[in-house]
Length: 243
Image 1 (tube, rainbow, N blue to C red):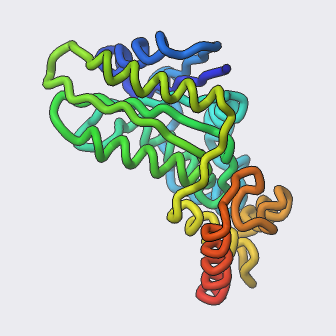
Image 2 (cartoon, rainbow, N blue to C red):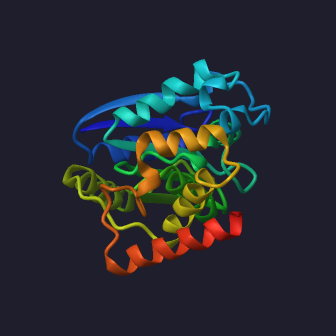
């Protein structure tokens, strides 16, 4: 297995200690990306990645290699301590630069381990936000480790080991889980937008080139009968709404 670690903390303390503990339960190769060192410029909200294509982002040369490494990995480990009740600026800036993946999801066979630490509160909500973002990207399954250390340099090794082992087993199995209903909704929202009378050019090209426009959900992920019907209804409704 190949694991990519994206560390959204500007330092290596409690969050990184949790990563190190989780790694003791994983078998494979690891590559680290310390966002603090990548020095991704601040997203300037130009919308070029969405409207014209991600290669038109003024910071493409910095962001694109990270996205490519996610594609190459079997599993993603992504981390953030809680800063002001939210993710760090490093993670938020990275997510802002990859907003185009909301419109053009692609990581349908990927699984992630989300690690969040806090001295006080907010860890559950931060992990939820990171989970939702990755699911918008297409991620099949996200495991979460959250821990409130109370300002102490301690970690809950038992809980970390338990979740990391589940993550390892899930990645190794290659099994793809059925998506949640909201994942089906958003997939078909973007799919409907791509076939509208006035689509975003980059979206239309992506959905047609990948062939995803012809499927209720990613073809390698089984929906089952009821979710398949649900997807068809959502797509039909969204086409009418957008029209």
